[in-house]
Length: 200
Image (cartoon, rainbow, N blue to C red; front, top):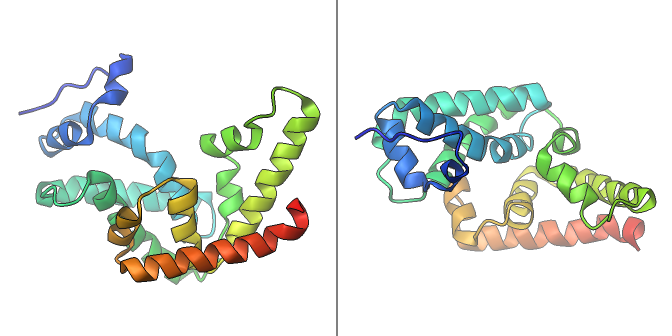
């Protein structure tokens, strides 16, 4: 059964993934557009941890959505759609990132993201001095995150930036709970060390 998604209505964004995925499997274009709008910002941020620039991250995201359209019929719902989607994205991004032998450009992509703009100005109350300070802090955090080893960076980003649960991270990245905890701990310790001088 096809799902009709009223894109012009506020409630469209509230439809659960399961409903939209059903529509996607039936090639419902509206369901596809809602899912793309819902997850593309997150996908760009995660892809940016693996590839050299925003253009490459956008290519990874596009390739991921193509793969999703091709294989959505195989999605059995054993994990959440978000986890399944991110597993596909990470596999594609790793392959491309390995070919590029890239450096991680987290700050260049994050600076353009809506999330990053909100983070950089959060609590600034419109005061120019506060906004400048918030932007400076955000930049320092972005550069510190960028300097982490790839696996630590992506775990810290998913847990602390995106707010994922540990199980979601394990499933999306194909790592054990113990490995996830170690990577998160080491990444957080390293970030604190990198930021201590700047934020102290």
